[in-house]
Image 1: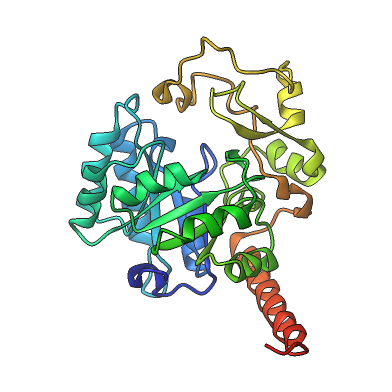
Image 2: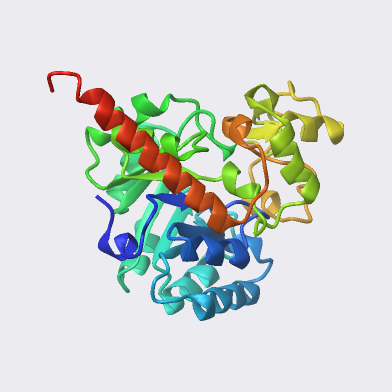
Length: 317
């Protein structure tokens, strides 16, 4: 079930994922105007004051027919901005908060205090159980093949296992690049799709032109799943690793200590040239405006659902 506050004006059942250095107010605004939920990471703005500016920009641009928007908060002990950004989020009554790297009841309660919704991203059932105990409204199942930090479980296995104990909203992530992919996610038991990589190749995304072109030029074989970059397993475009002199087959340094304040600092590493992407890159063939992309996804979704009903009609259901 999709919470009512997010269901309003939602014309395509998916969320454009919050992507580090890629998702900004332009992408969020365009996505919401197209009838799909748009999100961005609070840490894409280098300061909390900048975060306020982006929220003001998004809220000023919102129209009565726009879909809801959301922000991503990194709930990790090394994120020194968390409490300040949470206070700002509450003050602005952000409709959707996506939490990562920690499900904390106090954070959930703070968002619930004004009627906001909390989705938490997970990669396995153990993390899902902890998030459920913290009272989140939904779980984002980051399955095998997703861009950025991702798990290694098959989406069907993840959905079935988690649905057995969690009755809230399920959002599926992992190589969803087309409207039929989202239709398949809903048919498998998810309530919403979660699309990241596909939205990098849009006019409104804050990605380098070379990054967008690399998405067009690559396929699933060009994705490397490694923990050597940030200390947490993630999917990256192999050519971008090679271009930075990195070994795609390298393993994480066992002495590496995860520090999200450091890892998510755009100045800490060459993030502008080390690019993440999911295995769905093979479905990306052009760069287009968000409005055009969402219209295409909606058409594909409708065609897929129509095809399913016509095909299933031939069975004794």
